[in-house]
Length: 76
Image 1: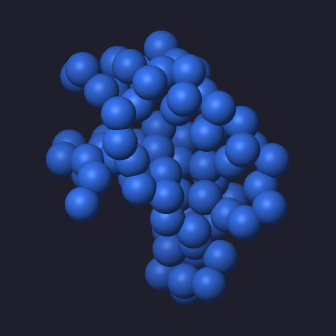
Image 2: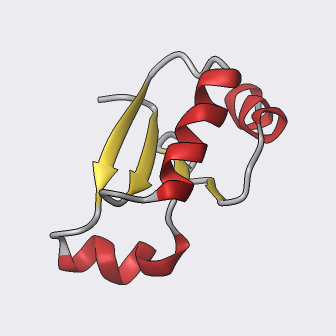
């Protein structure tokens, strides 16, 4: 299991932008979790996606985030 989780939706323009930010930040490894068909995740993340979660610390970055904030999460 990866330390980082990106909660996202199918066909989500903001999620596509978040993926570009993660590539720019050179996040080494993350898991993509799609919330569309999961009632629990939908209730938790609904309109907040994309959300990047550090599974080790529980810290979440809600959109909009940039490569600098991702790097801070990575090192922090």
